Amino acid sequence: MSVSTVFGTALIVLVVAPYHEGTKSGEVLPHPSWLRDKAWVMQSAPAPRTLDKGGRSGIGAPREVVVRTPDEWTALWTEHGAGRERPPVDFSREIVVGVFLGSKPTAGYSVAIVSTIDANGVLIVRYRVSEPPAGAITAQVITFPYHLAAVSKSPAKDVKFEKIP
Image 1 (cartoon, one colour):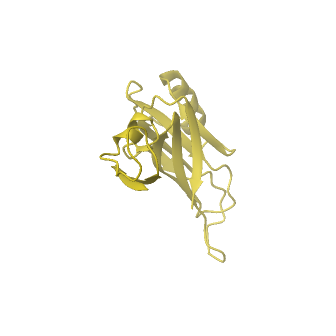
Image 2 (cartoon, helix red, strand yellow; image 1 turned 90 degrees about the vertical axis):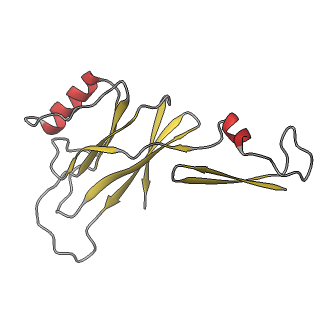
């Protein structure tokens, strides 16, 4: 049985490979590049660049968004932040991803887009939601937490949002 380790940006993949084309039984693979050739390795993208984050959005329902064009960005910003200046995005190199939590009954809720990973033709957007602890004293105000971030343009056609603990 051979063991290979692939080191990527903030990502470690451990592969146990009892057989691989071109190797003899029990031979240790010389380099893990065979994984990259087969596109089995997930690759971390650079950290998301926050465009806007807070607790007061014009979008009142929970939503996960992907914006790939300037026209889509204009439409989303008009709905979300009407009256405020829209942050610039270079759509030749970036796309916008966003998570809107919808209406929350108190302050103390937030969302953060933590990372993105390209994995086998899917862009995975990982985000974390924070809630006020039980019994916490919070402002009794309705909030609409959100996070909008620019991430490196991906060749992936599909985008999946993943809530992490």
